[in-house]
Amino acid sequence: MRTTVGAVAMVMLCVLMVHADVKPQRDFNLQRFAGRWYRVGLAYDSPSFVPYRDKLRASMGTITPLPNGNVNLTMWDITPAGCRSKVYQYEKTSVPGQFTYFSTRHNMVKDITVVDTNYTDYALVLKHKVFNREYTQVALYGRSQRVRTDVIQKFKAFANSHGFPRESILTPPPAGEKESCPTSASGH
Ligand SMILES: *[C@@H]1O[C@H](CO)[C@@H](O)[C@H](O)[C@H]1NC(C)=O
Ligand SMILES: *[C@@H]1O[C@H](CO)[C@@H](O)[C@H](O)[C@H]1NC(C)=O
Image 1 (tube, rainbow, N blue to C red):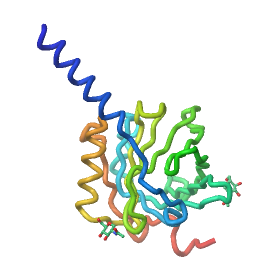
Image 2 (image 1 turned 135 degrees about the horizontal axis):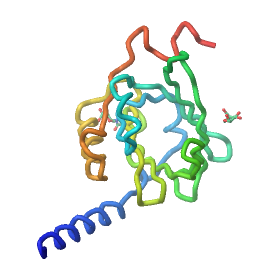
Image 3 (image 1 turned 180 degrees about the vertical axis):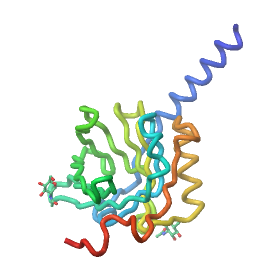
Image 4 (image 1 turned 90 degrees about the vertical axis):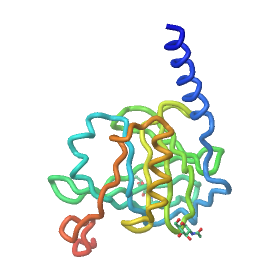
């Protein structure tokens, strides 16, 4: 009994310690972060997601900085109805690299932290419901549909250390010619 209580206390302590140290990329530069990214890694807390995991492809997104420091993220996804885009409006906070947005799907405000990026190759982005608690998603973005394996390893280790079980950490493959979305042919 004592051991169990001790172990539980240990786990809780670890969780609290891990959760306390989410900091955005130092000297975050929004202009350098702008432009096209591919979501090449995803860790998700929702079981409703599981049926789709094998269908996922590295979807494309574009970060557009607005003059007031907010951001529009346009994500492209292939759906049964074809290629669709959705705009997420991220509002800046007083901390560079940290944003908030209103999730219409979950009907709540969420925090977005750009944890680590080198702008030219990859970006690790954490989404949470309550700041520094209740992580809901970790995403790895790449400037191309493939990123280096050491970057993938870093993403997996990060997601794991933030409480995402191994089976919820996905690395969607690049979209094939026919699946690519938006298609180069539909460039309008
Ligand atoms: C940002 O997104 C909003 C909502 O979709 C749109 O009205 C606005 O024109 C967008 N701004 C830019 C610069 O893309
Ligand atoms: C960004 O990261 C990639 C992959 O780790 C690396 O090859 C590249 O040199 C880095 N670029 C900069 C500017 O640090």
